Amino acid sequence: MKKILINILVAFLLFVNVANVFAQEEKKDTLTVATNATFPPYEFIKDGKIVGIDIEIANKLARKLNLKLNVVDMEFNTIISSIESGKADIGMAGMTVTEERLKSINFSMPYAKSTQIVLINSNSKFVKIEELKGKKIGTQLGTTGDIYSKDDFGEKNVQSFDKISDAILAMKNGKIDAIMIDQQTGENYLSNDSALKKIESPYVEEEYAIAIGKNNKELLNKINIAIREMQNDGTIKEIVNKYIVTKDEKVQSFSLINKIKETLFEDGMWKYLATGLKITLIVTFFSLILGVTLGLLISIIKLYHAELNPQFNSLRGILLIVLNRIVSIFVSLIRGTPTMIQLLIMFNIILSSVKNLEIVAILTFGINSSAYVAEIFRGAFKSVKKGEIEAARALGMSFSQTFRKIILPQSLVLSLPVLGNECITLLKETSIAGAIGLLELTRGANIIISNKFTAYIPYFTTALIYYLMVKILEITFKKLEGKFNYVRD
Ligand code: GLN
Image (cartoon, rainbow, N blue to C red):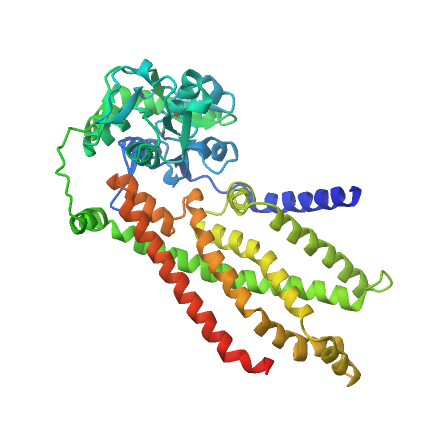
């Protein structure tokens, strides 16, 4: 037990050290704004760009502060932690000022007002909010709607979703009865979807402000001055008015072909799937290369350690023992923790200064995969017949020669089917990278859903694309297996 604890401590210290190297302060000529672009009219995606009231205000703000604006899209409930970790300078996401949030971050002076409203299905009979006692309420995780609903209706009656569009879908499918949401975003959804209506009594009133790190007093002052100026000269009012929705009666189409056309081809929505597919393939490909290379290296260290039985009496022996210890801890940590947590640690801590999300994803998935690939190779090394190894050694080959000429070629072929499996797992696992804002295939589908308010077509199309890719991988690996089968004959 003590040994395990020491191992974990050593690994943790290593980890923090690496984290510090990566988390060096970058030059401050940009203003990085964390947002969650599923909150129209404050932030949403249009024609591939994040737009909305907050983004326009952020643009003006950056100009006033002489900084370049960099907008990063993430889940709403990770915005505050990304400001705390320094990944973002400020958060603008229609964020309500609350006492609880003020414990971790500061807020600027408010720049907009809102209320919470309740959306229901248009055929629903509820008239008053009180009638929702004991019913199921959907919310977006970490939002004030989520907090109020849990306080007022009880935790067990509230279902929190990552995206409000998922909650709307769940309500249409009868899984929940109502949705608590900010007024303008709620109105926006209402005007685009005739299957929804609202309960005509607003709930809690609130104010939106910009979230800023606790230690960033200077920025807080500058932002407050800028907001006051923009309020006095009418800039904020002008921006808000530009985005306030007027009810446009959408004609709902019922034919499947028309629905597909509307969902995927109007406003170039298919481009999100195309870009997502490209990024998914790039991330999978490079993660696989990294995973196999690193995995092979780890398995070789383990094999040499097992076969050569090193002692502390030579430099080579010490090196092998230490390396073996390090890779064993590494494999155990990677296999013992969820990939999602690894991704968030990489994004928020270790690689917090790396802007390129593809690199963050490739490093996370590649490193994660290497632990599994190492085990695949280790198993394959073991299944090479002992007799062949002994024969090679009896012929005078060194262990390294035996490894290169006998063990490795056979193991590579033996592990092909399992490697194929790992490749398929990796491809599908990249779908979680949307959580850090990477536009991979699943996130592409989610963007379409939050723009078009329908989930069936984007989800089924995406599932079909994944399925086709998996089929292509299966066929490729089968072909490879067939090609190399002679080694075993
Ligand atoms: N105003 C709400 C909050 O601060 C919701 C914000 C959002 O969903 N982007 O929690």
